Length: 202
Image 1 (tube, rainbow, N blue to C red):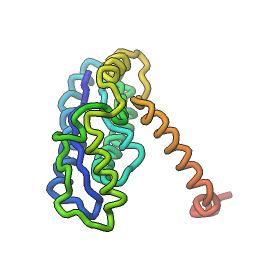
Image 2 (image 1 turned 180 degrees about the vertical axis):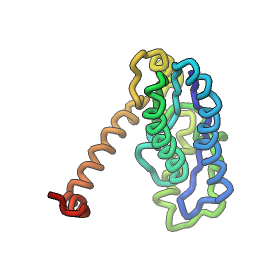
Image 3 (image 1 turned 120 degrees about the horizontal axis):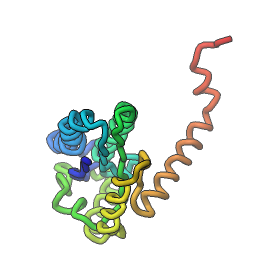
Image 4 (image 1 turned 90 degrees about the horizontal axis):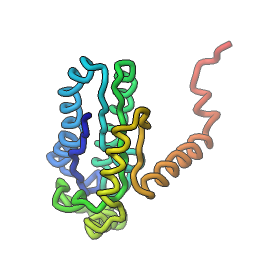
């Protein structure tokens, strides 16, 4: 079993973001996960068995102001994990994407790459700035219970038929379904335009 849990947060509007911090987030959250996965896959392939649990986030399914680059890293984890799951399924290897919401850990505290952006822009104070303050103020007080999350992860790791996705926390579960509903409503409004982009076929 592989549990890819390493990750850091970063709080800044997209325009406020520092390239060094952006790259640090992507190196840790995406490339670090990929490197560890590639290190263990040869052994799993040889045994024709294994479980890879990749920690994404509800932020890997839907985005929020002030964490655009964190979202980008976790959206990438989702895509990588979906493709990997299809590649390794015939080899007896399973992939589970863990999608937590807010848990009382240090994610929004000192483990964040930078709590404050290097250059705050006043125009984003009521969007990214407000959300950044909320994240900071709630650090360690989130409703998610890390012990219950750990128990759920252990259980799904031993499930003979695990789901591809496991949202953890009420907000993660509801937020994921809400995102699906929002996408459906958004694209349905322009269905004719979308379908009309193909060549005419018999």
